[in-house]
Image 1: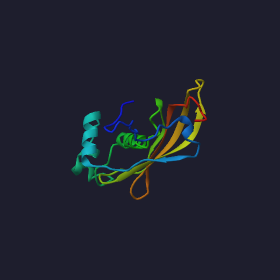
Image 2 (image 1 turned 90 degrees about the horizontal axis):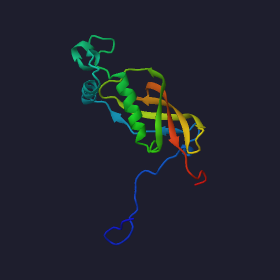
Image 3 (image 1 turned 180 degrees about the vertical axis):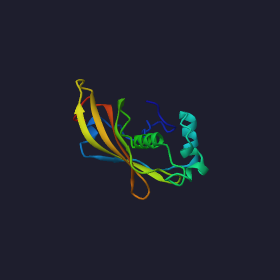
Image 4 (image 1 turned 135 degrees about the vertical axis):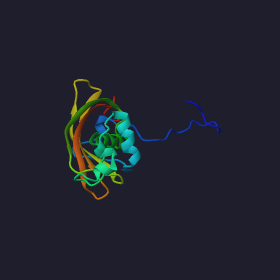
Length: 165
């Protein structure tokens, strides 16, 4: 290992590695929040081709049941998945296995701040000793404490080489 300017091996700081064994069924991981902006909606539409008046046209959206523009559902889902990865619990993911039971429960509007919560509902080992599967039940919660979206997502995650470590 390299040394720093005073000849000492530096400590490497950051989030610790997380492994399959680090979560137990019932544990809840909470991620940081993010406030949804106009730029998010316009960027999402441009990246995905999801160019729909309800999300981009203020005049049209004002005539809908929502009275204003709302965020794309897949944007909300992606944002929640992205924010939860910032917790450090996903550094040892081998593969994302998919989504189930996606439900949009409330509209997300510009100015809403979303925070993700993910509860581990299933943890099972695989046939490979070095991998396990997590299934998490996600909730996207706005600044009012309202659940705006729920879904489940599963991941294949590395297990520790020495589970007693």
